[in-house]
Image (cartoon, rainbow, N blue to C red; front, top):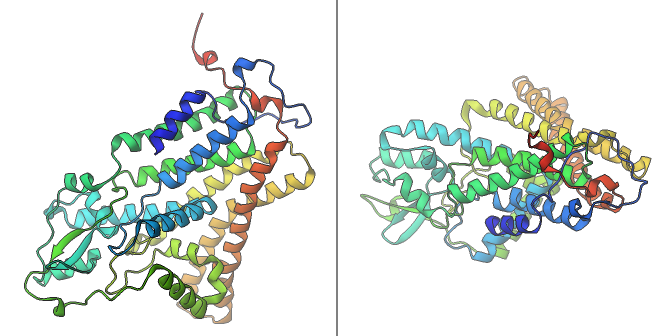
Length: 423
């Protein structure tokens, strides 16, 4: 899909991507471009941005392996939900990818005698190993459960080569490399427009932030298989299904959804609006008897949890700081300028603030300061995330509405020949 979109995009206009301005924009001028051979339209801008954002969300997401009982509709619906979450909080995807990258490296080192690579580690975290008794699927094996059953002699440690795992994957070095090239081309366009002092629209600035995060995401997930639909069967050695926990009967999709909503409402109804994002950060735990891992599962980060949190916060600050490039832009009104600046500051500063609050809660937990600790938790896991989500949504909406008043320079394309040395 990404290859097809990229071919279509490049065939329309090789230089129709975006860029970033370091000059003051005058939106009061008319939206014209004198040299028609070096112009682009608003449609070109929107199309290139949407193509890149699609690449940075739908194509870049490497989902975990679905359960055997899930339909194609349910799998697609869940992936669509992940894409929506990635549009609102793409930094959380980085957190997910970074956790899996860290744990997969650890698993590769632990199982080096078995010939494991980081791809094997990713495969295990995706729910790639399912316990079977004959033809009956029992439950998904976590890396810890895999080790436990192997040491007890109840299973033979699975033998699967990296080539066999990659054969299951729907992505290869060519398709992944093409996405990287497409995203890098967008970033290069932005740099080139900055060098030529051509303006960049707010929508292009938002897309640039997505593109930068996409490069980091792909780097972390480079060895992770893409869109595997079926796990590897691990047969029970000396025993029967009675000797292990059997997979429970699974209700239909809508009943499962209602059960989850009802449970969340009963347990933490105040967190219901942000619960999907909280689950994305935590990763979730593999339930006993489950036939798939949670959507954002990454096992236990161990002693690296704060290192992961610090690295994720740094990347999130970079993402927010890119939006702050528009600080000196000339907006149609003072209100829109204040709105953009405020939201840009919020998404830039909140990740670090949330990290500091989390560390404070972790330290104070040893002393149990009661109401003070509860106040910190309330702000860290409810107030701050709500502010962040609202700020992200406002920036996305404003990026499109500001297309109604573009300066003439925004329609000028990059003159690539000016970068070629000549006499």
